[in-house]
Image (cartoon, rainbow, N blue to C red; front, side, top):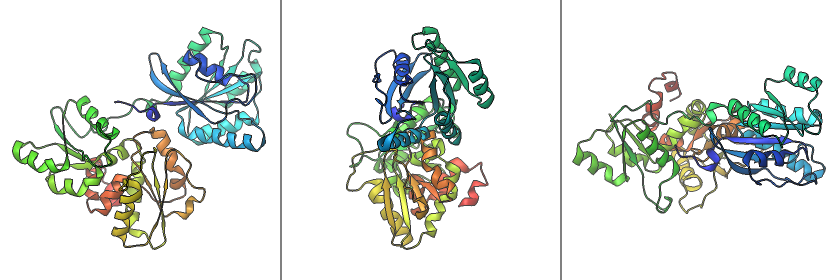
Length: 409
C-alpha cells in the first residue's frame, strides 16, 4: 500500500543539547541531513527527515531540540519536543557522559504515557564508555534496549539499526487489510468516486488509491466510477458487487443507487475502522442527536489543504449537522497535527477526519484528550452517514459480527 510521508513509521531522537543527536541522525542516514554544530541549541523545532532502513523500509527521523534547553524560548522548544512524542512510533533517548537525571526521566514518562517503545543510546562512548553502574540501573528500571554507541563505529551503527528493527511495533509498518476480511477471490468492489471541485486535478485522493490497491492485493476486482454512473453500470452489466465504497459527500446518492442487499460504506468509515478509534466513534456518533443550542463542535483535520467554498469539514459537515439537529451550534476547526485546545471540556463533540495522511499512533493520540475527558468523538464519514439517515447501513459491513457494537445505534 502506498504511503505518504506522514504515514511512514516515525522515529524521534531525544536528548540534551550537544549530546550528538544530529550526528547520530546523519550517521544513520549516511548523509548530512541534520545540522551539526559545537554550539548548544542548534536544533530548535522538531525537524523531520526521510530515511530508508535497508531490509526494513522507509521511516521518518524526527530531530528535536535539547530537553535541557533554557530561557523562555527554550521552554517553548522543550514543550514542542515533548509534544512530538505523541506523533512517533519509536523513541531514541540519547545520553552521554554517564549522565542520566530528571531531564531523561521526564522524557521516559512521556514515552510511557503514550505507550511509545524506546531505545536508550549512550552516545560518544569513544570519549567515555557507559559505566557498569549506570547500565545496571537502566536495565533494572526500564524494559528497553540499551546501547553504548560510538558514531564512528560501523558495528555500533548496525547494532542500533538492528535495535530499531526489533523495537518498532509492527502496527507502525504492517497495517491490516482495509477490506480483506469483507471480500473473497474474484469479488467485485464498486468504488464510487465523485469528481468535483475538491477532487485533485489528474489524480484520486489517497483513500481511494489505497482502496484500489487493497482490493487488488486481495485478488478481487475494483470498478471505479462516478456517482452518476452507478445506476447504468448495474443495469447494463448485471454485475452484483460484493461491496460498495463511496465518497461520504455522495452518500445519499450512493444509498439510493446501490441495492440494499449490497453492503455499502464510505472511504472515511473504512479508514475509521482501519486506523481510528472505531469503538469510541461508534459510541460517540449518536451524541449528534443530543447537541443543544450553543454547544461547541471541534472538527479535526489531519493535514493542511486548500479550502474551497464548499469544503467538507469547514462548510458541508457543519451545515448538515446544523440542519439535522435544528440547533444553533458553534464550530471550530484545527488543521494539521496541532494540539487540541486546552479547554477541551468546553466542546460537546469532536469530529476527526479519516486521517489518511498520518499514522494510527498519531491519530489515536490526537483524539485521546477528548476520549479521556469523556467527550463524544466521531469521524467525518460516520457523522455524515448519521445525519443523512444511513448510519446503520454504512457501519454494518464492519460491525455485522460485533453484536455489542450495534447497541450504540
